[in-house]
Each structure stands twice: as C-alpha cells, then as structure tokens.
Length: 488
Image 1: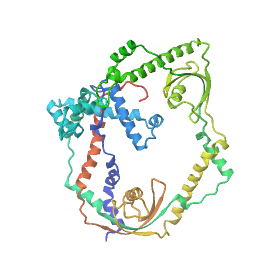
Image 2: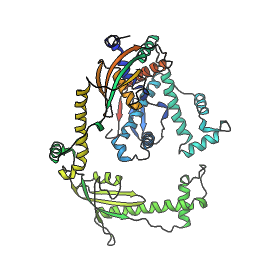
Image 3: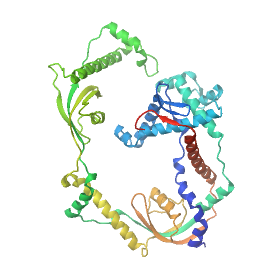
Image 4: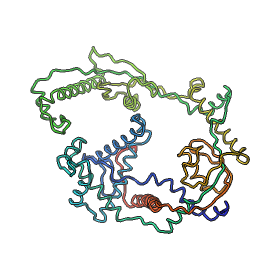
C-alpha cells in the first residue's frame, strides 16, 4: 500500500496536468463554423485581412442564437450586452483572420476541386442519396445566402483547416504513461457533505441595517428619464396599380415563396402593400420628427409625457437604450419602431441614481445577508468538525469516479475529485463551486493497473489546446490588428 506522503512526494510534480485537464472540454475556437458576408465596410483589419461589417453581423447572430438556445429562448439584447457578445464575435473573427494571414504567408490556397469535394461531403445538399446542385441552391436561398457568399466562406474554412494540418501536435509514450498513472491513483476516503441548509440564521433588524450601511452603494435606484413622446400610428393607404407595380419591380427579390422562387405580382400583392404602408409610416415618422425638433408640430399633434427606467419601462429595451444616450443639449431621438408603431422621444429631465433607503433595499439585502452569514458559519463548522467528523466511506475512487460518491451530484463530484487529487493533505475539507463543503479523511491509497484507452486522445486534446493558445499569441505579435469601431 502506498502511503499518503509517499504518493504526493512522488507525483506532486505532475499535478499541473490535472488542473489543466479541466480545460480540455472547452477546446479551441471552432474555426469551421463561421458565416461571412460580402457587404462593404471593414470593422477591423488584421495584417492583410479585412473583417467586414457583414461578417461581424453574421457571427454575432450565430452567437446570439447559441446563447438563446442555452437560455431556452430567454436571451435578449440586454443580456447580449452584459455578456459582451459583439466583442466575442469580433475576437473570433480576429483569431480567424490571424490564421488566414499565416496561411497566406505560406502561399496556401484552396483549389476548386478541393472546394467541390468539401461540398459533396455536406449531406444538407443531398437529394436521392447524392449531391444535388438544385438542392444546394435551394438550401442557400432559404438561409439567405448566395452561392458566392457560401463558397467564399467555405474556402476560408478549408484554408484554415489546411493550415492547422501543417502544425500537427504529437504525443509521446511517456506523456501517455504519466496521464495513465494520474488516472489510476485511487483513494478510499471517509467524507461528509456540509451545505448551507445545515445552517440556521436568525436576523435582527439592527444587524441587517448595519449590513446595509456598509453595502448601500451597491443598492442604487435606477436612473429615471422623463420624456415627451409622440406615437405615429401607421395607417393603411390606397396605392395606385402603377405605384404597386413599380415598387414590385424595384424590390421583387423581397417577395419569395418557401421554395426560394420569386412570387408573381398577383401572389405577392398583399406583401407589396404591407411594405408600401410600412415605408409610408416611416416617411411620416421622419417628417414628424423633423417638425418635433423644430418645434413646428401641427396643431393636431400633442406630445404625451412618460417616465422610463430599467425597472419601469412602458416601451421596450431599445427605447431605453436610445433615450439613455440622449442629453439635454441633444434631447431628440430619431423614430423608433416598437411593434410596428413609430415613437419619437424628447428627453426633458434626467433623475440620477442614488442609494436606496433601508426600507427600499431591505427585500434584496435580506437574502444576501442570510447567505453571507450562512457561508461564514458553514466555514466555521467545517473548521471545527474536520478533525472529528464521521461520514460515509467510499470504495477506492480515482479522478474519474464521478458516479461513486452518492452524496454528490456528478458535477459536484467532478469538482471535488479534481481538487482532492491536487491536495497534499490527508484530512481536510474542500469547498465546491456551488457553496457546499466536503470534509474528507483519506483512509487508504493504491495505484490501480487499469488501462485507459482514451488517454492518447486526452493528451492530444490537452496539448492541442495549449499549442493553439500559444499560436494565437504568437500571431498577435506578428500581425497588427486595427479595430475601426468604438467600444471593442
């Protein structure tokens, strides 16, 4: 049997591998998943590669959709700003552009044949078991992409893949043996889980008020904006057949059926009228906006008044965002479309944020105070119990034994085991990411002889992640990055 101190004296030098393994799942940037646009106007330049506004918009949209799926449809622009989604999108495109610069420096290209072979691998373009050009065009049309846009995108993806293949990450047998050894170190432990639910707290008004005094600048009222606003209600107008036909001819690509084909004027007439009415409503809103700014509103228009803040918003998040950027020297906002109705705003007063009173903040302060007190008492309980506790005894467990600790959920067990196997203490406690504390006492240790068949892949992924991170840092130093939009 291997003693605790022997084990840690011998293997402590490789514990850095354990902590790094946690990052394997995150991987490297998924280079083959971006969409590109061919719209003019660069938002950044990396070396010789420009990043267009269209590319940024499409990458942002893809990220937004991913986050919206994670949040089960409850993701919005406010959360997107909080997560810095636009910055994330730009960073991904910048990293991609760095690799394209590297590819160009080695004169790497993608031939037409390579691109055709890649297209033939994509099952979305298949019909009757083989690649079909008409299906290819239809799928692109349904996704609002032209063949030129998509094939430009595909060439970039293939070019980056080809570049990375020239930089293979190899693993050695010694590295595999080290990782196998780490995975086979096994402990039998006695453990006990402490949670915040084990702690009872009684709170007095005086204690809570004292806590609020030290924290009150964290509990502020919302900035309040007082505004005048005009609601420009859309109206259905009558348009001549000539106007309808002219608009249809000039904008016929707007009117497509589910098959991607342009609809006839007769079939699309209702959609044409809807667009004409929307255009007329926007024109009316802009004319009203100009009159509003010049204080020359017609007698039949009287602005209403409202107050808007983050917590009390009678309009929408976009309106609040626009109004918050107004000033008393530039108080007018251009028309904002809110659910098909245009609103015009004039800022009349800004009421600054200030600390809430104790009574106003009490409802939010109370749970925070209780949680803090429970955490402090839980830590005290752990310190007082660690040398005397009696808990459950496990079988021999390794880093991968996330299903062998019934008192912990899989994620909790993974968190605990990662920290346990880098600790050099026989008896101690470990705080988990969710606030729980696990007391443990190592009873026995041994080295298993199991063979991990996936260890080579694990080492390769680990080294690839570290290599790619280093590669990007090197390329950042080699190629200058210029950002043309503010705030990113």
